[in-house]
Image 1 (cartoon, helix red, strand yellow):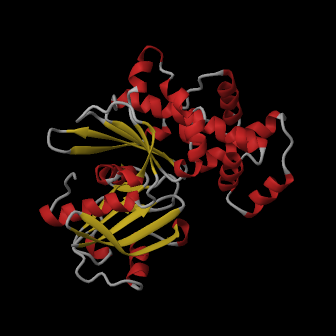
Image 2: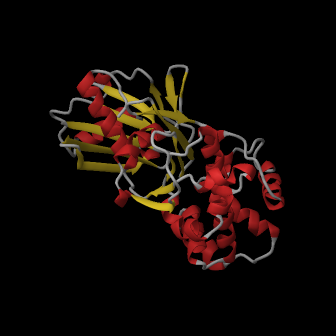
Image 3: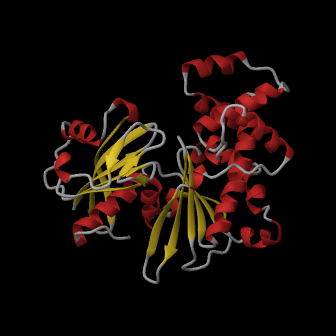
Length: 335
């Protein structure tokens, strides 16, 4: 069975022709473009059709950051609007399903192997217990996986837009700093690519370390978040090291809050594009301390497994599984 899978984020838009056979998913062709370089899904599919034949493709599933409001998907970090009931004829395929990007990632979680994961905390997983997914990239995505007795049902969340809750003096100072820039500070303002740059600016404004001219020059040529990540994990710039350290602290606390909310003793999975890039900081930094620092429930946090998803096509994998399920049943089902 061949399906078309899409993963549309605020930075990149990906489409992939994928084949499912004998429980395995194989990518036949993939196209990645700047999300802002195309004007909507029909154009993206048409460009893809110029590179790969979609003959025999029975279904498409496209994952997009955001949530449906008033009958349409409006991505918060992308000027796209996609009708919830997108006509399949608009993309020239029999069936088209639109889902949240972290809902797609949630569908992929049961399909991941040990090679796709890096375990930060083995814990003691409870069979059939809820699982949680959180990932920082252009924005901050979340999802829950709840067992219904037969399979995991995936529930997307927009918890990344919840209020940032500072826990210590330094984080309170960060809150004040960000409030001067924004009328409201969500946790996504920190746990995202733009958040990494904001953390760098915060430490620069405090004046404890002078700005490195090499870092500033690199930021003018590259994505500032990529520079902060590289210099912060490599130890090349004190400001970047501080930014990455505070990022991992707040990431750990936020992931712990999510684990408590979902009672995710089945496991917490860190997705998104940033976590694999800061693995050294996640494994040796304050992430685990902040995750476990939940007072009387600290023992529960210590037994909760935590895994980093290092597979980069997890959104496409989940979308492909949904598209295949649609073909089999004629309606969207859970994997």
